[in-house]
Each structure stands twice: as C-alpha cells, then as structure tokens.
Image (cartoon, rainbow, N blue to C red):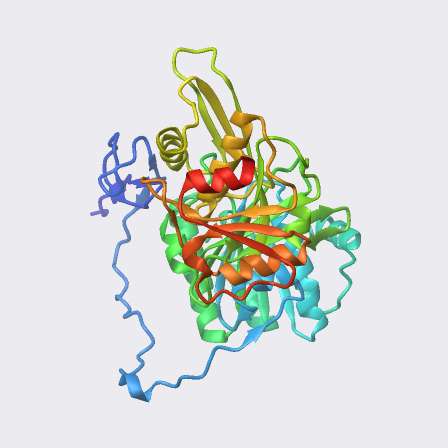
Length: 459
C-alpha cells in the first residue's frame, strides 16, 4: 500500500519579530504589531526526522578569576571618524551592522575602509549580493581603491559565500547587504525574517570561531529602522546608523549599540566625488555659514560623546495667524521646548502666548543634553525682542522650572573649544565657577537665573 501523501503545512511569520503561527491574525501575538504576518511557502513534512544535534561549543565553565583580562586588540580602518564611532578601531571577530537610507554612502564608506585594511596586508573579502563585480570595479576606480588584497565576490547564496570564506580565510569580510543573502535549503524568499535571521546566525558563528571581523550592510524601512527581525540588532556587536540627506554633502555616523565602546560618539563625513572625507573640525563646519548679528541666533558648546563642538541654535518668532500659536522644532525635543517657553513666559517676562515659535539646530544635529536649555532660551528671547546676542559669545546651562540655571558637565572642555575658535565671552551657570580654570583672554559670566542671563545677553 502506497504511503499517504504527507500533509503540507502553511505557516505565517511576523516580519517585525519573527513570531511563527499556523494561522493568519491581524495582530502579532509576539510584538503587538498589526498586519505584519506574512505567509510562507508550504513545506512538506520530512518522512523521518533527522537526529537532533546539540548546539554549542562544549566549552567548560570557568571561574571569573580564571578568565584573562587582556584587552581586545583593535585595528584602525584608516578613517578617523569611523574609528572614533567604533571605539578606537575594529575588534577581532566582531560582527558590525551598518544601516542607512539608500544612497547615503554605506557601500562607499566600507569600500574605502576595505582599501585601508587591505593596504596594511590584511586579506579583505567584499561579498555583494546587489551589484556585479564590474559595477564594484567602477566604483573602486572612482574612489582610488587598487589594493590586490581586496577580493570581490558577487554572490547572494549563503552556502557559496561560506565555501569561499573557508577557501580564502579572509581577515575581514563585508556583506552588502544582509537582506540579499539567502540559504537555498530554505523555502522563504531573500530578505524575509527567517532568511535574515539564519544568515546572520551563520555569519556570527563564523566570525566568533575564526576571528574574522564582519561588516553587514543593512537596509532600512520607511520608518527608518533596519529591515528584518529585531533579533538582528541583538545578535551583532555594533550597530551603526548612517544619517544624512542625499541632496546635501554632509553625513553623520552614529552608534546605537557598541559592545566595545561608547554609544555617544558621533562621526561627521563630507561626501565628495572621490568618496567620504572625514570632517576633523566639525565646529568650524557647523559655524561656517552662520549669519552673525542676526536676532534669534545663539552659539552653544555641545558635547557629542567625547568631542566638544559649537552649534548654532536658531529661533524665529512671529505673530500667530491661528487660534493657537504653533511650536515647530528641528533637532530639539518638542516637549522640552514647551517647558522652556513656559519658563520664559513666567520667569523672564517674554510674551509668547501670541507668538509662533520655530526652532532649528543648524547642521542636522539632535540636541538632547540639558546644557542646550539656556542657549535656546537666549535665541527665543533674542528673536522676540529683536536684539542680537553678540557674535563672539557662547551660552550654556540647564534651566529649571523655577528659572534657575543648573550646573553642567565638562565645562572646561566646552570653554577650551570656544577659545580655540576665537570666542571671547561665555555665559555659564554660576555653580560651575567653583575651581574653574578659565582659558586665557576669555571673559566668563556666571548666572543663577534665566532673567539674569537674558539681562546680560540682550539687555
């Protein structure tokens, strides 16, 4: 008697979290997202189950005092801004994910880093599932990439890429992109939750066992998150986001996860025809097009990671034409703005109830530190009263609900950056004056309230 035909099984996978269910539902039980369950191709059940293999390496458990304390060696990429965001360089055996909008420069930056790593005698394997070897050659010629240690492989099948890896034994590997890689033995399409998860798992195992550092290029969704399951960001050691408008020449590289360094570091690049050029002096870049002696402009010495940089905080106020005034902000938290405007109205006598207020942080930066409060208050008050803050003055301080100015961190580094760029006067919290070493030739005003600060700045 012939065996009965095995029943085919249809499953549904959540594109956000990878939750698996035998029937379709509008809301995913795993993550709570709506309309994210996608049908996978029916798969026949195997006639006989293969013996289950035990995962793991079989390593013995060690006491904490038995584990060595040597620091993980780092290798420079030759690009100072990339090394800064990575925490000092590439760690051996690490798995790094670089995400960003299409055309922002992810592949260009990694191809330039590949040239520097290959020029140091390392073997680099660049695997592209989106472009042919000829297309990569055209970009390499434009960027001046010529090292013979850089190997190009146009392949999106994971088993073939793994076989080439075992043959070549590269020191560094770049996958462009993880969403194009797939395992042929899986029925799902490339870019699906299961394919991305399985391919990333293979790459993570290979990186940890061989010591080869791997860069993954990740696509992003229309909401700006990296496409694929959220577990992808949990698996990797470093997650970098490349931000910037394709119509502008400046790009910002941020670390949102880094097991080997700080996540507060920020790298700034300038896009040119011959590739990405690091911006070594971002303060001069951010202030290069600043309009001086204009109401509504104030300079803030901000801290991004370990780097001080001067930022132009701009404000524009005008009589509202609506029933309720508008509050629009770019680069500053809208809730924090509403709080500071209430403090200006109550504690400093600025009439803002009938004024539309527009805030912009020049350069595309996002200010989240409390030290930006006083600079924003000064910019708004300057625009309301049509009085300019002096062009060579810098302002910093945290503002409380009672109108008090609270102390901020790293005050001496901020003042040193102001002095380096020729600023002569700074308004800071009075609490920061204790034990302060003032740069030579700089005048410092210590203030306790918003009203006192505005009296000094705009009279």
